Length: 215
Image (cartoon, rainbow, N blue to C red):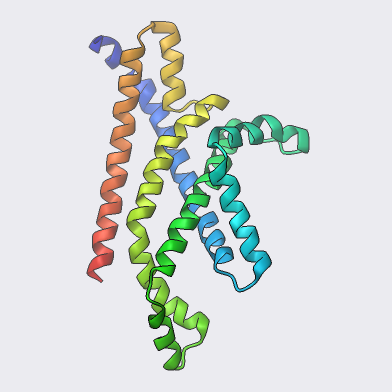
């Protein structure tokens, strides 16, 4: 292993890691928003809204994320959607992970005993109040850990945006392989930085999970 080369290119990989973190944060935020909206739709009393929620989940879980990125970035201009690579990456990956988060959130909500909501309504709370004050707080505690799994998967999934030329860790590794002919060192360095980001994120999720379970 060429340690001297790794130390030489490390600052450039660190800049790329910042882009990866930015992508991860923005796609996670968008994914949580889409997940909340998708969950609301999936649990709606209206059949058409439930259908739209199910269609969203089926579409984005049933097709490869890379194809979704290509459609948005390369195919978008044909239908009037003009996005730069970074924005296309955020939107594409955010919509994709949002479909998975939808099912994570929905699963946590329906796992709460129905008797909890019924007991709250017998005490005079409306359906919305019983959901907001009784069911949702319990469901949120249950969904932290699986959402953390979704987020970790999303961080690793940001490598896909290298295919549309976003200069993040994987793209940077590929670019330096072309000039150094040292694939092991470049991908090793990228892998270490991915591992560091995911480890820090995992510890943050674990902390939130412990705090939630103590309440």
